[in-house]
Image (tube, rainbow, N blue to C red; front, side, top):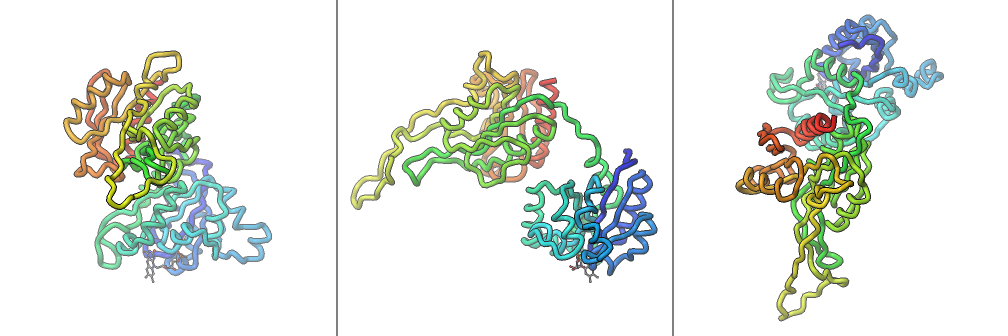
Length: 401
Ligand SMILES: Cc1cc2nc3c(=O)[nH]c(=O)nc-3n(C[C@H](O)[C@H](O)[C@H](O)COP(=O)(O)O)c2cc1C
């Protein structure tokens, strides 16, 4: 790990773990990394500016309204000189300010003004960490691309036990080093098409047929491919999650709309069909809302087959992507159905997952998948959907190399 010549802007917030920020500074300096420290009013209750100044060998900032700092617009300048902003320890308070966009002291103002990547190392009492307010704040920050290290689980200063301990300084150092390492971009110059989410098939202007897909796995795959340097077109059905950053997104409603958007996105080097496309649509969707007439029988819905997007993309021809990956969502006989699907659709790989209710995959944060390729079947351990996405993106990079 070489951090020589790099600069970290370290915000030290108010918490019992603030003393560990001193050890973090020592480790960073040992790696040749420059550190400028910003101490919040809370942080100054736990460590002194003098200790931070001695270890960083630089001036420590804490005042937003200092005339000398602000003649140079310190709150804007500070992070301009940095490669990364690190908040360690990150108190519940500063995380809430970041999520809400508050800017009432130097630390929160520079965190709002910065265009640099931000890493937070939360540390707080277990109940503060598990409070719905903190959980929601962390989700907001994660969706905005703020990176997180820890917290660890263990005994706490408040005589309680659970998650909330500051990650150990060497783990924070490793997270900093990986964020400052030059990105590995094996998919640079490649275009990958990803489909995600459910489709909504109208019955009438207000009702539709749908399924429980959340789009989390497909969106994570799009983000992971983008992180490896691919140009990604994500064709998404209606989902309640944000567009992944750095990805071109086409929003569609129906299977027919999804196929048209996929077709328009070609050519592509690879296609990953993670969307849960409805197999059928209503033959004659009503143009007006269907009315309930007292005494009359309920309307009968006649279904017709939707286009098969995976089979269409995988069909031989000049526009076929070199690698076509399908998903198989099965509730029983997973491997047999997935192998059948791979043969029937003509795709190269199938990512099979068990979507029976017990697995909690549809809408959940984790997935346990099996990868079927021409070489056989691999069972991957249960992991966060982001991790499954990262592994799949790496495999795609190897296949396209
Ligand atoms: C003894 C003591 C320990 C504290 N430890 C923590 C802590 O570990 N994490 C935390 O989020 N807040 C902790 N707090 C509360 C914060 O210090 C308080 O919310 C403060 O306003 C945070 O300010 P800042 O985020 O601007 O630094 C502690 C308070 C006291 C008095």
